[in-house]
Image (cartoon, rainbow, N blue to C red; front, side, top):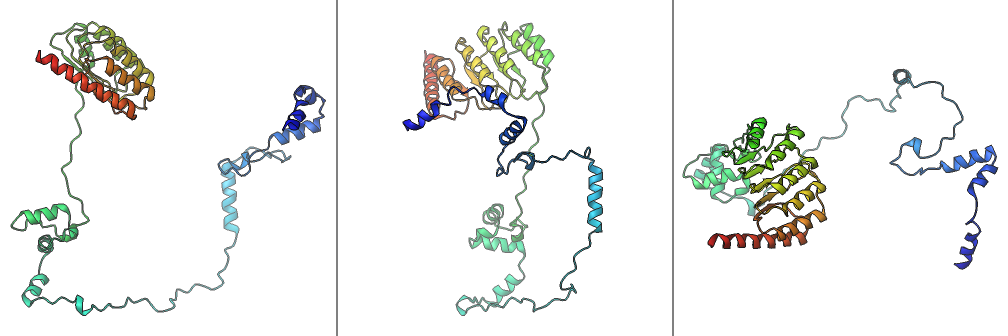
Length: 345
């Protein structure tokens, strides 16, 4: 090993620029070709990038795609089709397959009384469904057919056994109506400190301009009547998170804050969590379902905030790590117990 290192010592002080200046044009061209060697076995690269260009022919002109397609179509039409070695006549050779009849063994043959044979021969699908339910053959029908048959004394489900592959029909659930909140009106009421306004709910309004949301957070700093502030699914990002953090540092009336289902990154969440430490009136905080996972550091900060802020008794976030999840659960249990003891006094 030491001899090999001694061999490398003589190359330590080599001047590469001096060597390049002494090379001839042919040697430089050969060196350039060697440096362009690529990976010919990498199937992920296009064919033109797997090895260097070794052609010396200059291009004949720009690529004309329409002319190329026309030329290929013409060549395809001019090429004669290869004749079949054996001409196709449509004649079928061999004997068709006939499934052999299976004889039922004597021990498997079931003989019923003539009255039962006649009753089963004229039974409808719905009646067969009820018979199967009585006999416990629930695999021949859907759950709805089975329970309708055993819970009713008469045939009430006329779908029959043939509907086993059909799904149960449910009433469609209508979509949630759009949020009718007027943003400009809410902004003016927050600025005027309207005592009748105790909840600001802008959930699912995705076309709110960012400057207007920032103005709303700025107006919330001096508001003393709003108890609930919710910005769920408003496409809010880090600028709004920073504005919410500034609002929490000054506002002492908001008790519930919900910023779930937005585009807030770990930086914005950290700003909100740091502001929560300076606020002792907030009792509910929900920050779950952001566009990207905030990371381990943010989850540890969440657990630390819950441990240091006994006023928070409801926290909305799904932890992915066991450590901060256990710490947060223990902190929430302690905070709720402290709140219960305060109410008893």
